[in-house]
Length: 525
Ligand code: XMP
Image (cartoon, rainbow, N blue to C red; front, side):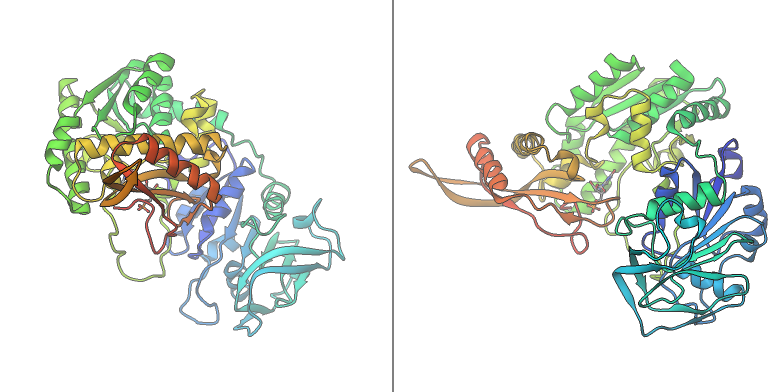
């Protein structure tokens, strides 16, 4: 949740009340695709004064895993029905709204999961330009309970086999409810329906563009920083790059970027990152070649968590030393994104388990007493990419797959050596080159090679080989939280394997990883 003072004051705002659905973030993305700023707040953290200060022009109630038929389950903050603004309830949100306004919900034995069909019964502003009365429309459902009595003032505008109140409207109060999920792509007109809600029903302007964001964010940074100094850690990833370019535009040479080359980067990666910033932007940039220090500290380390902690803590040391050499700074810029700051409702119960201790520069501000500048903290990843384009970053840079902070260290299970890193870099380069040539790069969230700590016997020419095995990984994902393996054609995999074995000395076997996340993770360590 943003501080109210951070809000884009000149733009309309939509409040999304989260009941813990897996797809609440998609509601926000769809609304923003309509050029309307929105935020997601947990249902139990939306006090009246905060909601009033946020001054939403409309409210959307998300889906959720609980059942309204049980008394102790979540309800919408009453204030949202008293603001005089339009409210749209989705799935659980529709049921909670009906229960709170005098209707009733039953635990259904008409569960609908997946594709369903809607019979459009009456005209409704939500359907304007999309659906005609009498038509049958495809939507995506995921519910067990359903509304079985409407509150006063509502009418039914669409039904489905499992939900007699699949879409409902109270035109005078501008309250709407849908049992289906318009935010998912499996509801083909869902985005347009949400657009009708925020634009036609609520009258939002749709003027929240990246061009506007660029100007406003730069002004906000100038106000926060004044004439003081800012340092920014560049990782080579798109988030820190966009943050740095935006900051440079805002405060010029008050910004210094530090790029720590850990020796765990991919082929020529350090040179490319530095060249891009120096040549295109003339950004004040310090490159620290710390490969020997990192590899020294990692010598003999095989445990994944110790590797990550070693890298994270050394990274902070190196960064800290460089900042001191600069004579200190007052602020640290980070490319934190909105998904990292959304406080989402968890129904899993209990503190979540640490699967991997992700390393970024998170430990820095505390150690160095720096204040944070986070110009991207209201944006989703796709918006950061759009902002990058707006700022003129090269397309090649913007479309780059994510790369983890600990770099190739987590792609060499077991002990890391310079020799293994060199072998891995070569294999990785061939794999990505083939992916680009096949035109598949943009369809994949992340693709990389892993050098397995396994030697296998092969026959090359007339001789026996005894070399390392390599695994290839490629996944599709929307946020890195869940992922599926990418279904490459076999001839593609065969081509890559042949090239790697022929061209990379040290590898004589290639495998393809077809594990999804969960139960696997994307990286191997
Ligand atoms: P996992 O392996 O946890 O990865 O499924 C999910 C996403 O996060 C990236 N990743 C990291 N990013 N520091 C980072 O900045 C890390 O320590 C780290 N570990 C994993 C991973 O590449 C994938 O995109």
